[in-house]
Image (cartoon, rainbow, N blue to C red):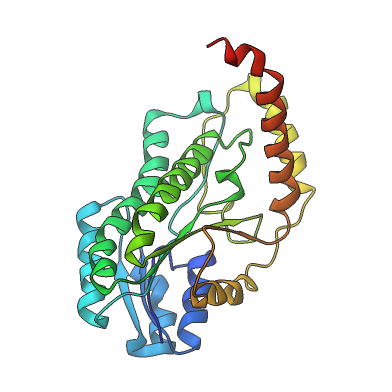
Length: 268
């Protein structure tokens, strides 16, 4: 039996994974902005689930929530930083408020949760931090510049974190999903005020998005359960096959560009 702390458990991956963990007999501290969204979990699983109202951008609230989870369950085994959303819009269009809110939720939120949980994980000499990133954490896409920035930041922080806490017995895995039907681009998304000059870029992006159907997110539950049960989990894990050709092409272009411009680079 494992004890989980999952942010953003009201829907999407967070809800699916919380339900999967609870259904196999694990315990879950599940957080959401609205406690009512967690009521079905409580009604189904009773005391095995601890519902917590939490806005991950509030650092003091994050610390209190983690402490309450440990007070209730005694310890934590798995910490899943899943809470997040997408800001859709061109880089020029993003307001300061929108840009800061995107980073506060997708980057600083996981930072606050990680910092709050680590003292308890260090004390036990074990634990697994699962950072929910994205294909957009490895490749940049038009209309998602600030979202990309938040996830690239999360990936860089987590890669360093893994090297820091690995010797202490704590694992870190960056999970990078492809396109799934999790409401990521639906009600939870935020959109900038469009600038007309970018309409051709926006239209091309829309056409590409409609060309692929989002995958069913439910099969990811078994993958996450197997991941956290693995003795030596990977630093990075794609969800689904979709990211492989995209990322392979991105990395090849990067290598080609670096090598093509090496003569100029060496002059520095």
